[in-house]
Length: 395
Image (cartoon, rainbow, N blue to C red; front, side):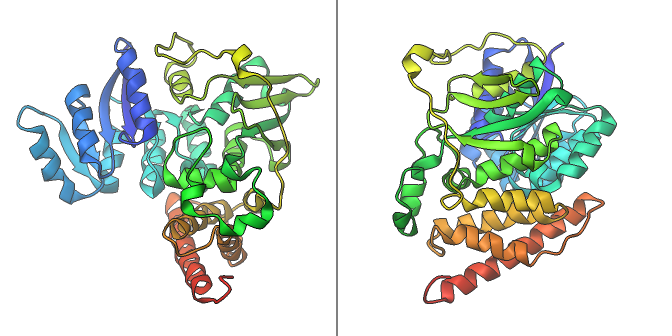
């Protein structure tokens, strides 16, 4: 059976890599729907090539410009905003949704796709960080498996095929360490956005690149791993592995450690999720790992003083309720302020810590509760940024 796909975030790096995989396996997949933001140049070419039935854009004022670009020969239905993204994700002909859209829109569309019985390839961190309890409960109730597309969680999923979850002692997430793993701590206060955006391995969007520098991305991945694999934060470790060859590991009860190794190319975890439980040949140059050329592999524990965001994420996960959602929202605001020159690099964890300290512990029962908490956390984070910006010392 040809699998009908929806791609949320089709013009981003994950979305474009997903379409590269689809292009190489036309006998297995067809694109039913695409959801994107405001990049009409890329989206137009995608629609022309893959001929989806429905296309969603970020705002209503983009509908007619896209329709004009596509011309009368296109029969695609064009929708917009959050409702349009949900419509794309829940289309009756969609079997599998690649969730790579950032922000609240991606969370709601993914949640509604699960409720409508779609299988999910999960690439956006917000879905599980913001509403992990709600999303995983809905997936269990519908018999839906959430297949991770992040390279680290995909690695853990693959390693788990060697043993049951009850046999796991701990999960070990690997991290490149970003651009500042060896930078003297005394120099960290002078870090500029330009330096922080120079990731040594991956080419990603600006927020995730800064999150890699602060290792907040790994903190968010701890939260994701908790919801995906059911282990507490105390049994989810992080090791810095600058070569980025080992994407993650699992230690079993008998001391055996299973690791997943591959080149750093997102097409591998994307295709793994799309074709699961099968493995099929992946076509493309530079996709085979040459261990002899890789040389020595190194592993080190992260320094807490250098990467305080890791402990903030553990604090949020252990506290539960609104805290993981607030952590993510405050981080996004702080990163945006740093990139805009309104906040020093070391101010990022201080903003997050300040917002977490003002957040009451509260349980949630529906997605709107989580989204309201997200909005409130962003408001508080902007207040903290403004207060720090007006302070002579920046603190």
